[in-house]
Length: 129
Image (cartoon, rainbow, N blue to C red; front, side, top):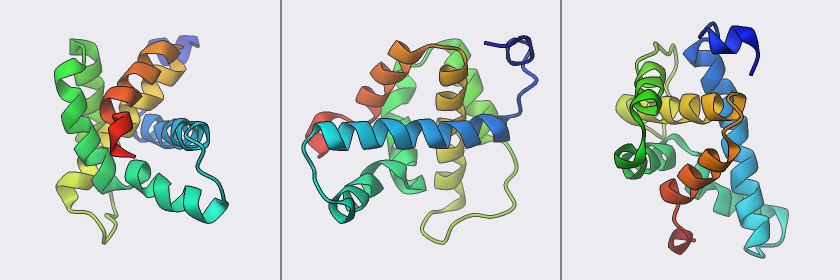
């Protein structure tokens, strides 16, 4: 992790931006490893992971497993102001999803990849597919 990251100079918005990509990669990896084939099928299944509604539900499964620091990062991301909310989610769902993404962005930058994989597996249990 860089010196700037260690000192918390990366905004929640930037962490969420990165966390969105991290979640996308973990999702794509899970789907390909599950043997799902074809771009259309992969994209359809990815919606169970990457929408604000799905991430809002996922963070509810994660909250009991988070450390105090992780909960703080999630809440900071959740509480950031957003100018736009997608029509497919409520404001609360979108805010929780943003917190989820900020947490995943932070874990990625911190090099906590094993923790990230563990939390992804808790957030999205295999039986959901």
